[in-house]
Image (cartoon, rainbow, N blue to C red; front, side, top):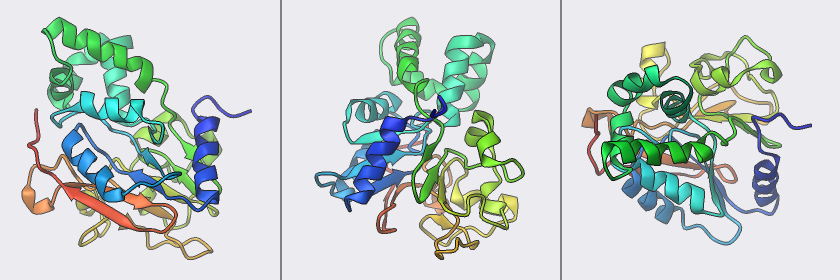
Length: 261
């Protein structure tokens, strides 16, 4: 029996696409940058059978979270797992309104609400409607050769014992000295690759981050796709990136719009 934090239909569709030789693109944190996301999708040149799976954090800080949510939720080939920002919105607008100020003022929820349109009350009501979608997103996708989770996994807990908290908020996968899954490459976002030096890990000169720890088939044991679209310093080259699970090809689009509160 598949755990409720997974979506067996999605996993079957993604694996089927890979088995048929189609591209499955994993996309890093988008954070409301609809225009950049649409440009990235154009660069992927999707053909029949190709699919896209976002690693979460569709919302907050960018100018059009509503637009990003609409693109993903309305597509029959673009999907997403849940990120910690989707969780923060759910907590703030649902189970714990006392966290609303933190979401709005500290982590970009103001930008998400403003993308919903209408009066302040209507913005909140419209955002709450989106919880029906974002709350249903899986926190993990497990395929034959890949494992996707927004933040990766905690290094000292067996994978089948980890919680949504581990999958959405941990910052350990990039410091692991052995593969956390010996058979699958872990695909994650959450931590901008430009900021890895804060964790005593060498950031890449460009592109995505690939772990120097290898699987037996010599693939990197983990890949990070958050390329810092919300970083304010343009010297960091803020961008969103996509990684083709089939071929290892990477595409990226640099930020066009400003970061909002």
